[in-house]
Image (tube, rainbow, N blue to C red):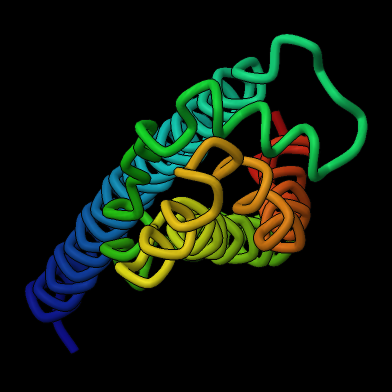
Length: 190
């Protein structure tokens, strides 16, 4: 074997090694870039979902305090409390609009940004918010029969008492659903 052959082999070896090193560095930089993008995606998803969760909770809390404030005397008995709220204008109050957009459109890869307890807590809270909507609607929606029956009873003078007597179990369920959302610790750990 002559020196040129050894030199050629050495040159090919050095070129191969430097090519491998460049490829490895390029791959490392690419993985690092992808990891950084994924980290930013996770942080954004966490921030946006935390905003959605806290806005829903704050809206419900403010609404709950407002409608319960319709009972100026703050009766302890559910029926009396509900009757006072009805006389105070409860039927005219609409629930806030809950946002579930970020939760429902959460990309599959971003679920990894959350712990199992966080995901379960958010799901439970959103179910409770939907339950609040159902219960509040059944509490405040008057059917034609309800209206006729209430008007028939002494010209409607005691309609609030009658309606409260009929619907206080719904109000109690509503209060429990509200507490599940407002009084519970934030599922996002704040």
